[in-house]
Amino acid sequence: MTTTLRKHAVKLLAAAVAISSLATVGAAAVSTTDAPVPTAVLTSNLNSTVGNALTSDEVLTAEQALNKAKAEAEAKERAEAAAKAKAEAEAKAAAQAKQQSEQAYSALLNDPIAAKTVAYSSSLTADSVVKNNATSLGNYKLTFYCPCAICNGNDSGKTASGTYAEEGRTIAVDSSIIPLGSRVYIDGYGVFIAEDTGGAIKSNKIDVFVGSHERAYDLGVSYADVYLLA
Ligand SMILES: [Zn+2]
Image (cartoon, rainbow, N blue to C red; front, side, top):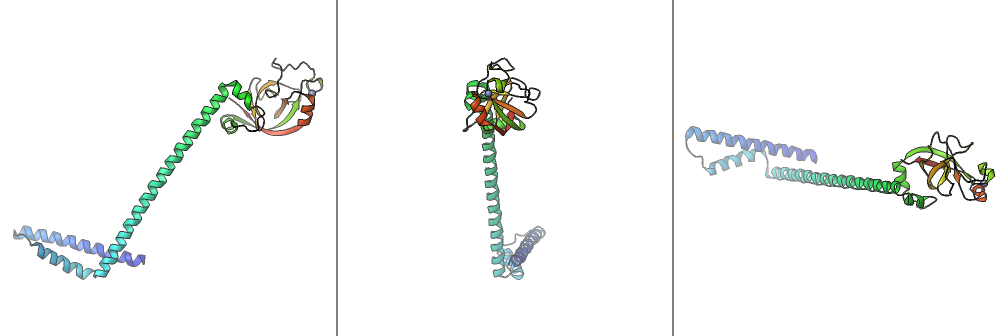
């Protein structure tokens, strides 16, 4: 079908070329004879030439094929315009999401109170924001300790950085990897401050401070992804 239509279209084009050459011939004829060629004569010649090239059915078929091709081209143009609009909308949404993420992150960093509320929160809305804006340190082994002599060596509750340990804020780290004073995000637990160190807390280990020995014992050992906040 397509091939047949193409053949007809070619024929129609041939007819168009024939028409155009005829017009040129007609113009030349006008200039040499200095006499206007009556329209009726031209029309008659055209009809005769076209009539030899194509039957009326063929002309109709070729016109239909051309109309179809034109409609297809228009449909393609509309589809391309729609795809372009969609891509633009997506890019705009992505830019907005990025901006919101950055705003939420800077709000988190600039507001210690907000940072504290996310500690130990399982419904941590800042989760993805924090991850996107922090340095991933990898998977860490988490243990838990309290201020007692068994956990801490002494029962003063004083950390290596001179602060008094507090649940939901204090963690002990390897300070050669995580400098004391750093804000650390522990996936599933929240944001903490690296305030303490410990003899056994080396490389990818973090000791999380909790209020009682029983609680530390119950929490046992777990593993979580850790991020260093800016
Ligand atoms: Zn203890």
